[in-house]
Image 1 (cartoon, helix red, strand yellow):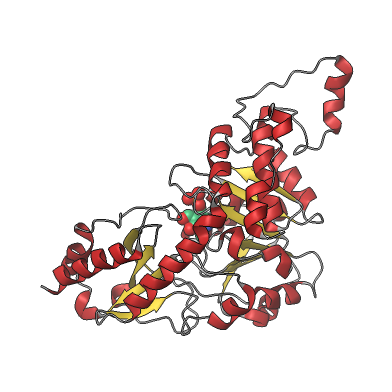
Image 2 (cartoon, rainbow, N blue to C red; image 1 turned 30 degrees about the horizontal axis):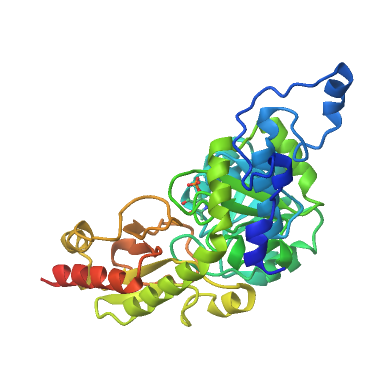
Length: 392
Ligand SMILES: Cc1ncc(COP(=O)(O)O)c(C=O)c1O
């Protein structure tokens, strides 16, 4: 089955819902049992299979979990109330005091903050590694390394990681869990579990939701990795809200239609920007000079539409950035991405441990752009007008 078919049908059980195509929203805490024996038997129910208590899921959340698990090619998916929690909670599930974590240096900023603050308080040591390290990760492993966390491409500079090489090194050691924040590609364009990763993470908030109106995270694992996630989810009391899950499932159904359009529009804008005299570099994994481009070609099935570009220093003053951004008609300025609408905003590359020679950026600044589903010619006209304002 192709993914466009899978995304349309996975998790659908109309006959369990009076023939209704989409499972209705069940708002639930208490689940009643008809007899004492049924109530006692609830302890034996696997959480994601049937209702036991609202926290552990309802038919609507099970449908979404099943659909994501199928798309990711995993055993089970569990939900969390935000994408950030879907990054941080698995670390709590698989790490203990005294353990060592290898975290990619190009991770999403709040994931980094969690390692630097909460994990330190819990006695877990983090080493941040170069996203281009590949098999070189072996040199950083310690006897107490228990998790290697990847995010590919990385946040802000979009370096593509050699995940199969990292997994191969992890397999030389006992008991290392490899995780991947797979939000950029969505489960449509990259399959971490097929490349040997144990835990794949989605900020559902982005492309799966797709409409900028929900926040949610999803974590999918292999069968072998699932028990620790299941236990941790129970211990932490994690949960996906029924209303947001309903929206997320609606979003997921059109992922197969939206992603190719995001990819085409994103590439068109990236190529147009690369040819502009104001721009010194475009950071997009599908462009030939991107860091890790060959790995992207080898491992990914397509590209999403989130990337960066760097303005030449003579076009980078605060005043010029204001002239470029303030009157854009179609590009909004705001947090998050993955919705149907385009976004653009200046971001600062954090002062991290320092690895491969980074692109020269005026004052550490680049512009992050998310290309939506508008006609790309309108977006280009909008950007062209912005550059004209900046030049005058
Ligand atoms: C790569 C990546 N992972 C995770 C998240 C967190 O998602 P959420 O905003 O739902 O917490 C984000 C949010 O921007 C992200 O960019």
